[in-house]
Structure formats: C-alpha cells, structure tokens
Image (cartoon, rainbow, N blue to C red):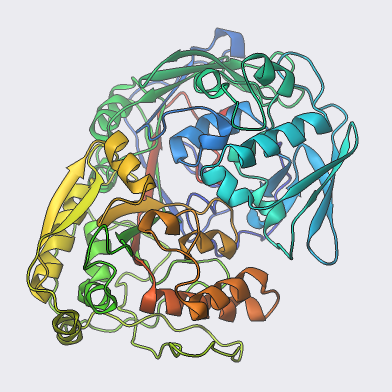
Length: 600
C-alpha cells in the first residue's frame, strides 16, 4: 500500500492505462492534472448528495468487480481484483510514484542499489507495524520472499534466483546473480506484500514444501496495510475493516465491501445506487451512460489500459502438431487484423503493436494514420460516440519491416524509433499456411467464458478471430470453459490456441519478458529456452540493457518474438469505471487497480 506522495508538477508521462496512470474523478470534474489518456464524463440528475458525515457514521463503501482470483494469499495474486484487496491489506518494500510509475520510491523500506545493479540494501521504517501490533522486521521480509520463491508459481518466477541476507532487525540485502534494473520496481508488486511471519507460521506457514498456510491466507490477511480482511463470503463478497495499528492516513470509509459482479450487474448497480464504485463497465454501456442522465450522479472515467489481450500458440507438438509449426504460426500472425479487433473491443482500445505495452521503453509506437486497403471482418462496436483516447481517432495498421536473421544474433543498431512487425497480409498468410502442410484440421481456441477483460466479453473476440482465420484457410473451433478449468489448462500448458489477457506486473519493459521462452507466461505455451539461441540471446540482451540501448534491445526482442515466438499480441482495451454520488475521488494504483483506502 502506498502512502500519499506529493505530486510532481508536470510529471504525467506517456504511460498508458491502469498500470500507468493515477487518474481520479468527481461528479463534476476530473480531479488532478488532465492527461491525454483519460477522459471523464458525468451523468447528472436531480438527486441530492448525501450530507457530510464522520467516518464512523458512513455506510460501508461498496466496490464491484468481476472476480478473477481464488485466493487472497499475496504470492498467488497477480490478477487485478485480487491485487485490489492485497494493495489495501499489505505493504510492499518499495512503491511506485502514481504520477510517474517508472519512478520507484520507498515503501516499507528505503533502498539503495549497487552500481553493478545486482544487490539492494533495504532499511525498514521504524514505525512499520502489522495489524496485530507487532513490528515489521527483516525476518518477516525474508520469510515472505523465501516463501514466495520456495512455493513456486508466478510470484516465484517473477522473483527469480534472488538471495536474502539479514543485517539486523531493520536492515537486509537482496542479491541477484547479474544486473537487474527492474528489481526495485518488481518489489512494489502486491504479490510481494510483506507477511507477518509469526502469524503465518502459526497457521502452517513455511519457506518450503511443508507450507500449509495457503488455505488460511486464502480468506484472511496478515499484513500492515490500512485494512484487514474481516469477513469473506467465498466467491461473492470480501469485507475489509480498518487496521487498528495503521499509522498512515485514516481511510475515509469505516469498511469496504468488495463484491463479485458481472459487468451487466455492475451497470444496474451503479445506476441504482446499490454500488458506489464499479470497475468493469462494458465499453458500449460506459459510452451510453455518459450521455444519459440518472436520478443520482454517476461519474465515468475511461482510459486505455496497459493490459494486453493476446493469442497463445502452443509450441509443443504433443499438444498440437500445427500451432508450433513456424509456417502455421506465421499464417496466423499475418492473417489477423488487430485494427479490426481493437475496434471490436470498443472506444479507447488500441491495437497491440508488440508485447511491450505502449508507453514503456522499447514499445512500438503507431505510425501516421493511413487508409486501410484491406476489408475488415469485424464490425465497429456500437453503443454511443467514440470515447476520446490517447491515440489518433483512426488507429493505423503497422507497416511491414525486416526481421532479424534466424542464423545470427542481430547487432545493436542506432537509437532510432523502433518499427513494428508486419501488418496483415492475406496472400502471405495463405502462402505460409500452404507451406505448413495444414489441411483443414480443427484447431481449438480456448478462453475463460466467465472472465470478462475490462468489461469485454471475450466470446465476441474469439468469434472475430475465427472469422479472420477462416479467410486464411484455418478451421478454428471455439472451446470456452469456466475460469477454473480454462485457467488450469492454461497454467499447465495444455491449450493449443488460447485467448487471454496479461497486465505488466511492474512499469518496466522487463515485465514483458514473461512471454520469452522459459518465462512465466511463456511456459504456458510450452515455450522453453534452448530451442532458439537467437531468441535466448536477444532476451538476455533486453534484460541487461540500459540507457539509450534499452529501447532498441527490446524492439529487437519483440521483432524476433513476432517472427518465431508463441504469442500474437492483439489489442490493449480501455478501462471504464464509474462511481456514485457518495464518492468524490477514486485514485488508481500503478499496478492496475484502485486504491481502496484512498477513495473518498
């Protein structure tokens, strides 16, 4: 959980979306500095605002989101709705400046990084206190990080081969084998929220395979954040109450109820006043609500998200003999119209030009608008006029470009603006498909049919992908499943072709290396190191790059991933949130969620 930070004048940056902006709204105007990537509209009716009351007299704040998690154990929380709760109940060692998320600031600890960028010295705040009144110590930090690493999963893959050394009760060092420029930013992710080691150990916690605290942590908290988990109706609601030992600014609301709701239900509840804040408005409803007065005031914020919706192509011939075929994969990439898919995703969505989200170093930037000569297979989303976004009104198709040689590691080039991978090319796609030997065998496309992405039903995207690839000659069979089954298959790498979304775990381009062979997203496509020496070398060059070499290093890596990798980036959707008249500000966090304790 981040403490208040004085805004830095003029520092908003070019970073996009939920991971990258700290925008907030009121029923009559946008609070804070205006940004080009966030727009606010208000539907104002005749309702009378509630009188100002003291925090103890206020009813609980009701926040609705589509739940995409099954546990509140911080090490398992890499999805947005889980991070929403983790950010309110746990503190992290570092934090990100909401005005400039690439700027890493002290959290639970002040930190110093070595010139070699391979170790950190961390000094804990002397007043840092857990919810049971005990002090946060170096032992708690080491327990938390060691447990996350030992138990595996996404958090462990993010953490990597780190080492921990206690200096004293308030001081420790964190070391890595080689330079890691992203380590301070990584430690700001709520997945590394510091646990009260004594409490967790009492409930079976350990830093090895014997850990049994996961079931308790699934529905309880043991942190030092402004709130504690007070009550849970599994899968439906989570009630948060103030941490009695929290030494930061007191939350405005005496309790917060986080409620699981579909996007359609969120629309009904924010309009009726049954919810105070909703996080998953469908794009068409959000656009229409901006123009439709309601009995009570509703403020809507729309902004492009850094979340990346992508297509997975499994690299294992044992899962699919076709998706790992280089020519078949090339046919898929060249056969998809990402511009049309972005339009389908609704106002504010933008085509994903690469695996590094726009605004981060090394991200591909859109070229000047050009008329598209290729007919689209997807209608433009309707529901109201197009919302303002951070891109030009007509999102262009990325131009073709050369790719690195498959037999030699590309040498660093001049620090010029990177050029995105090739655009849609149906003749080339059909030629690649013919070379692959594919003869119309069914390819199953899987996704979670009960997990919307920023209010978008992925079924419509899946149907559009099927229609576009049909023109290439690929027979796609739709295979939706509930989130638990779909996620289990995705995690173990048994999905031939998958439709998923990913958000950067921290505001650095290194986060996108999760898609590289051996990365925590890459393993879900059975993409492993050692198959392509070129790609492995480019991955390492990107990981260790710095200064002016950084954008080019990540551009070269993305181009090789676009040529031989297992993923096809599709679009970055917009996020549409709304709040009612009891709320005047909904600050966002740099990790893609909402600061529950900061809502007022």
